Amino acid sequence: MVQSFKFFLFINLLPIIAIAQPLTFVKDQTGGLIQQYHVLASNSKIKQGLYQEFASYNNTLLEEGNYKTNQKDSTWNYYDLKGNIQQQGSYTAGVRSGNWKTYAHNDSSAIIINEGNYVNGARRGEWVFRKNNGQLDYKYDYTQKKITDYGKNDELFTIIDTQDTITTAMDKPFIHIEGMDTLKQIIAKNFKMPWPLPNKNSGSVYRVIVSFNINEYGRLEDFKILKSTNNIYDSEVLRVVKLWEDGNWFPAFYKGHTVKTIQVIPLVFNLYYSPSVHNPGLDRFPKAMVKFE
Image (cartoon, rainbow, N blue to C red; front, side, top):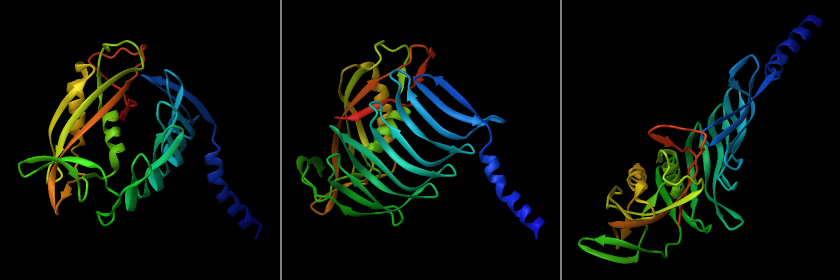
């Protein structure tokens, strides 16, 4: 009886002993980012515990969460370069799970612009998408793969109906599933800067107005740069904006049928770089700050 009890206790202590292994603190600066985290003292490739990522130019926290045996675990928070919360959600064994939220910011208030659940790393069930003013944009069911609700639509759009170009309200507006915030992320992830930068001042601003059409089938076409403050970036902006063609667009409806919509989007880039890094050719900034005006 006594021997059986001791054996049972030993087995249940094993996970505790494994978790409590000695850790080594790591601080690494690469490009414009500073990473702080812990690894196992016995294996420097395995992250364990708190992880933080900062912008090196002003030490703004960009990302924070926990690792468990080198996999993201529990709640993670993501911030923009001003320190505003951008996204929050949970991981289980390195995979997104449970409720996730994405935020926009108006003055001092944070507005949830999309919210829903992940199951095994994939979006499931109904997700709610809101405009930056908090009003419902639409609801989309990822399980049934259909739009379940449209919000109030009183905006005017420029459309091409047969041969006529007119500005009018729509029966249903065009929609990009996952929202415009996803489009910003595509730019931030893929935008590449010329090196060396034409403007050596970190934090310089570049503005550009792009246009494209969403056709009757939900495909993007006719990409153009209408205006920009520095044409050295124009071809790169056009390249990454074309990556918005991701199969997640629904066309607009007018008088009961789908129509081609002309979309004009002003973009603002806050350009940051680390002067201590010298990369020939193209230097990618994974944390580029991009917003729609």
